Image 1 (spheres, helix red, strand yellow):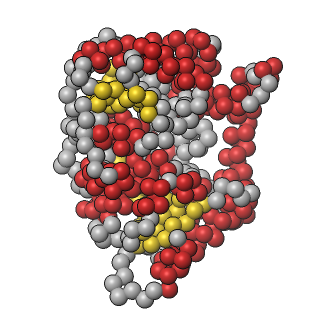
Image 2 (cartoon, helix red, strand yellow):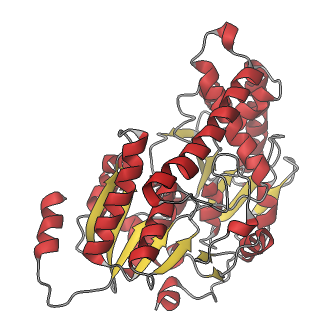
Image 3 (cartoon, rainbow, N blue to C red):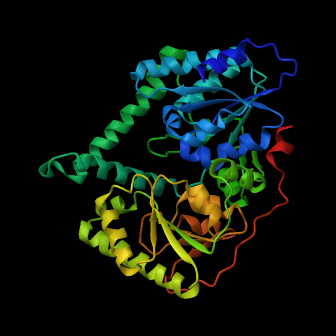
Length: 430
């Protein structure tokens, strides 16, 4: 990419197009949202992408960036020291802004370090730059429950690396809390004071989920569902715009480009979330109890599904971080024993591709359900039957997703259509 970028920078173009600078966030969120924004706008804009280094590992991303409307890709290094990463955020974004002077800056969020540096620099250098924040995933309704879940997962991960006599949940939890507090202070207050002359005041603490309504920025937010706009309003976010997710108009083109011709099958896709088993352990359940509990609930759900959709094949895709988890290995082993025809997919297979080819998508509160619901042609089911903390998040999406509290409820369901009357990004951005 370096030679290609240098060639572009030195070219005198007869037909220079306006530039969009995009920070799409983590790779899996780029695949649910960012890539569709790029595709929807590629006929009118060129793109500069600022992404993390793990994007380099994706053959699909490497295929995408060879297309002519991707003019430059900058990778944010994660191997540098903390101070160097902050300095790199300043230098890299400063150079991009000077070289390309983008018309629009599209951000997956406005509370992350790299985003805050970009916003600060752009407002300083080019005050008329237009910012847009686009929603990339399911919106948490209960922020506290969501971050408690993340905390439980971190405690679980850290405990497995310690000797058994040191595995005190309370002690590890205290360590995690202190570490997260110090991490926030160092990254958002102390280092920015030396790099920018001030401190960052995001509207949300990314370590704890605490909301600071008085710190909301004035950047236009793009979301896709009325229930999500209502949540942002309650939080105090100004400038909320409901648009049509670009995947609703270009998903076929994107999926075909990335995966080849794909057809919809009589297929059920099962997508459990990551992290809930850790929360169950923190609530006092043993490994054996967790395996029994989760296995039995998925067994009941699969029996219900196979009874109502007898001619459908069933596949299951675990979260990549669950695939090597001994608990999930035992759960999937049991499910295969109950249902020999179920196919466990490689966890690195694209969830978007599997959703596209499946008619029924079943999970708990995974973002995959949110994304699948945007199609308007899929039957999407959220199971709140596991007694997980925050397991009822999808009840707020009842207009788009079937929220099931009773596992015995008969799954004779039809797709819930979305509102196609919303403006798309092309109408909004021009």
